[in-house]
Image (cartoon, rainbow, N blue to C red; front, side, top):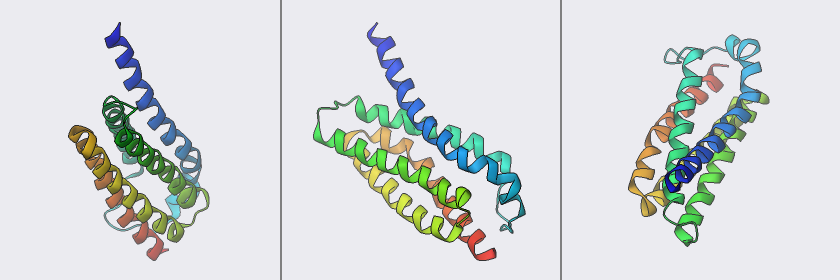
Length: 159
């Protein structure tokens, strides 16, 4: 029974992260064929179909990562503060979608993604003090956001 409860907790953390992705997609999906498709993009821009599976994977890793920190004891101050930072970066992730795709404001989105990147870095450092595995699970996320920031500023400059 205890194992089932832990599986449910992992699932809840993954679900919360996937929900953030779903909220972001509310702004992203309609803008892709009508706006994003018509933008000039740099040569390294991946095809549109790449983004959904990458983000689904990243949000899954993020959920597992957050669970590993939570599992160390939510009553601990380091766990609470690390999960608070995690929540902030999750919110910033959604806000980026609103700015870039919803408001079609790549320059503003670029400044926001820099804040997001910094908060992810703080998140990784905070998680590392609680669970090294949790911190390592966020490395693909910060790498992808680094790439996304480069793509973001390139699109802003080209358009």
